[in-house]
Length: 210
Ligand SMILES: [Zn+2]
Ligand SMILES: [Zn+2]
Ligand SMILES: [Zn+2]
Image 1 (cartoon, rainbow, N blue to C red):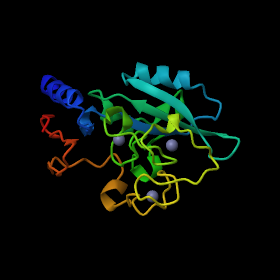
Image 2 (cartoon, rainbow, N blue to C red):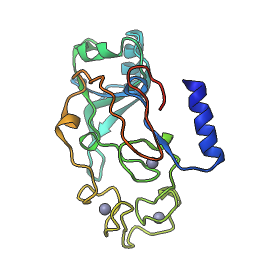
Image 3 (cartoon, rainbow, N blue to C red):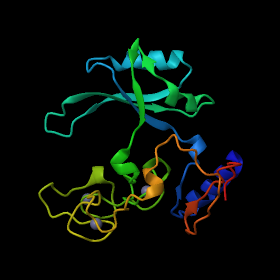
Image 4 (spheres, rainbow, N blue to C red):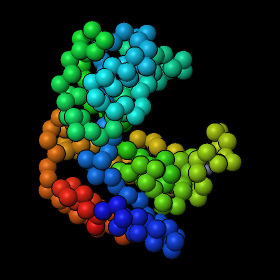
């Protein structure tokens, strides 16, 4: 699969055809939140404890409040790489001799927005669509925007007068019942291809690229 994948992405890169890739669920890292540890717990200690339990920690950090001071909360977000034992993370009840609760990390109600093109449902790492600025909707990365904060924002998704990350945007995906399900719900194996000219779809069962 990898060879085929590389052949196709190389072809698209060479021809400068815009595309993005949606990683199959089995290959995606899983984001969890650990509840129950003291606010001053060193994230490195949590990492080594999880590593001892044969989990592969890709990233760990303490969640902070969205206030101006970014006050730390007694919540730790961990990104775990896919491993054979990954599903057993939901059964973990204690860490560092303390009772903990493992929860699914829910990013803005479970909807990912691409930092590169501002569209929804894929990550910027796998995106080769034209970059659109979250602030001014022009064709550049947000980090390269010459526009000041005070300038009138323009939405790349609806042309409205707000940043593309604004949740009140009419094009912002509404959370439906399927997306609201917790991570522990077994995912269906039904393969439902969607028609999109530049979208790669993997079969969830055989991981084959279509
Ligand atoms: Zn994108
Ligand atoms: Zn801009
Ligand atoms: Zn909008």
